[in-house]
Length: 105
Image (cartoon, rainbow, N blue to C red):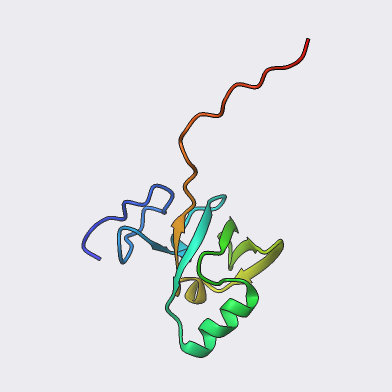
């Protein structure tokens, strides 16, 4: 944890690796992809059952008392400690421009 996190949507805290951040350090409103679960095997199994499996998209809704996020069209709350065990990467969209849409006259 000697380098500042280089992930653009990560909070200004420091992250373990530059490519991923713990879920509890992502700013509200950011959509991320789960990359790795680092809790105990039993807890990892339970997180996957709840929808927090690898490559799943998660939207962070709030960072109030607990972390509130949207996963699989459901809103779930996680403790900060548990959210720290979920390593995520911001969802990156392709930067190619959309072709112009022509409307019929």
